[in-house]
Image (cartoon, rainbow, N blue to C red; front, top):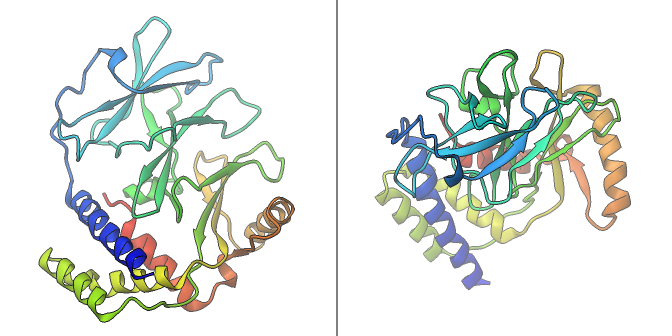
Length: 295
């Protein structure tokens, strides 16, 4: 058990360095924003403008540093002509391998969005949705608010890598997005030597304020996971953003999901965040706030 905990701590320390380096990272050194060689980049086909024809969308790097790359999305028509790209100053971390896919925000319309996941912690990820702005040569995020103010306005959280669910669960032709986290209901033992190692490593890195949080992460991980938790539910709306469901709207979709979950996974309990203990809820919030990517 101690070897497993030590491995976990080392992973947390390694990931923390990368994540906090990214948090400090603001503006990439652009190497060639007008790159036209379409064959050298990952790509996906998607009908971003809703014209019943799928465009080729490239994911192009903006930085030379392979350990700290930023990416933009550029769409080309069938003649190889650029028709849209992400706006200047908006860029994304590298998409996780095999996470690129197309989704329909409204199933009755041809217009599609691109969904992709990015790494955001030891076993967490965030998801973005991109589509073309109507009548504009711009590929923009589909956010969780009507007016964008920060990076997090457009990022959807997953407590486990790539676990975000997109589904029309109530058959109304409109997409829902479901965020999941894991419950960590109790503290485990990690030993004084492990606590000292965490404290020394984070203090040496100038992150003294994170020492207590990292010790709690290690203890909760050692205590073991509990139930799967529905954290938030969003629904695409007429104002072209994903609206967070609350109160009865949340409960209605949650109960539909819970019934489906029990049929498929009867041995794996599912709860809503409203059923979590205060300590478990606060820990899940702390985990998200610690690992989520910043502007």
